[in-house]
Length: 166
Image (cartoon, rainbow, N blue to C red):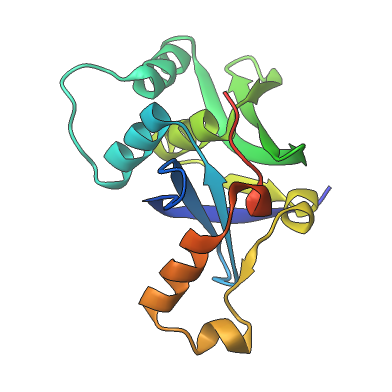
């Protein structure tokens, strides 16, 4: 399976549902993939994006600390599937004895953890093909102002990209 590395470029609100969406952009700056996330996960992603110092560990910080104390390391996360408008992700964790495990995760939690551990965020080619990714290299998009692009992204519905489900 082929994967593309993507980076979190921001979190925006869906203007229809007011649900937060995390925005992923590939390293070639060609495609943008929005994924609907929960409020708490959006807060965790924003806190990490803005490097907000928090007195006590949030859930994703706690998970990172537990892995470190157990001599395990997150090596990557991957958004691996999109079924019935729901994204699926995995965490790849390597222990000090070399054992590698993949653990099922919601993409929002995986992304928040990946940002804290500074590991790659990968998206499978299959997910990109199934979802409505915005091609930033298209002539139409190149002619848009930043405001027009933001408006276009906000006007897509959850079904266009794949909806987050709890």
